Length: 454
Image 1 (cartoon, one colour):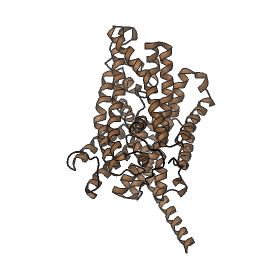
Image 2 (cartoon, one colour; image 1 turned 90 degrees about the vertical axis):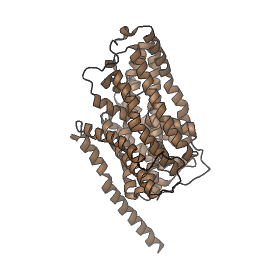
Image 3 (cartoon, one colour; image 1 turned 30 degrees about the vertical axis):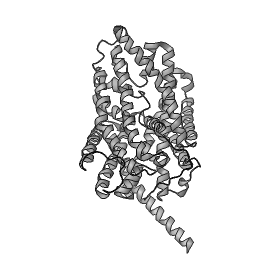
């Protein structure tokens, strides 16, 4: 069983840097919600961004608040599932998260280039676009080598900058609506939904924009007072994300801009309509910053999993090496290299795959919560979900229903000649043989070490 090693040496993440890191791991701002409006229209988009969190985010936030406070070990959700269900299921939890990262991490450098393309198209043509994506990966890796505190504290400052153009957009949009200038922006029926809207796709995009709450728990031994800070951060971050999604959507609807205009990157066009080229440029620059910060903070999260797996013998011991600041440098470099190799693929259409794999891992986390309630009733729980032991079961049912819906919706998408459902299931099942290969390798290593001793 993996246990965290506390050290007073490296600087640790405090409350607000941890909040900023969690915010970027999940959202980063209104970037990415354009398709919700485009597919569902303003009224339904507002309904989704305000309703989905109560079925998807708050249950997950309460679950991770209890488990992170009770078991503040490095590896986070991996450590919880290991403790509740044993190493086999703990390994599957880590496998699902790392497999999802391949699809998830390819999106953000691509979004970075898409936003830059609106500002300087010549810089993104041909091989230049790929080189820029590689530069994003390299910069995030270097930043992560400086330690968790550096990433979290830097993200807090950059968040304030990246969100600032939206204060201007919301202010101008509200003023425009009050002045009755709505018709000039093409929005006579702003609260309706555009022709041919795919509401199911809007639901999936909303779920994707609200996923990843457990990512920050993998750095538990690099957080100051994790038993107190994780529950507070989970609930605060959920409220912050809801507000930064709902207010801009409501303001633009009030201004009367047609929902038909919305697709990925549409905030740049909205900023141009409302405030001209200066505001549009500010949104592009903020979008670049957002994509980089999201990638950097997810690097912070995912790279702790190989380190935790190596501590438990599933990966070579070299992955346990850390710098003095606590950064697992081997894991950071190897993960960065793997994500760089994946940049040649186009994963923008694979939100469903990412969502389904992460959804499977969340189901395991809820099972760990339920099992530990029965298995270790005396476990110290600085934060405990109120109510009897059946409450976590009810909470877990809400995300599970949405995950089943995502699985059903994925049947209509095709990836690599098969349905997205089959593709995701194949990847998930792939963790079974990988576990046994790791076990055989671990056993041989132990036998070899025993022979050397004798």
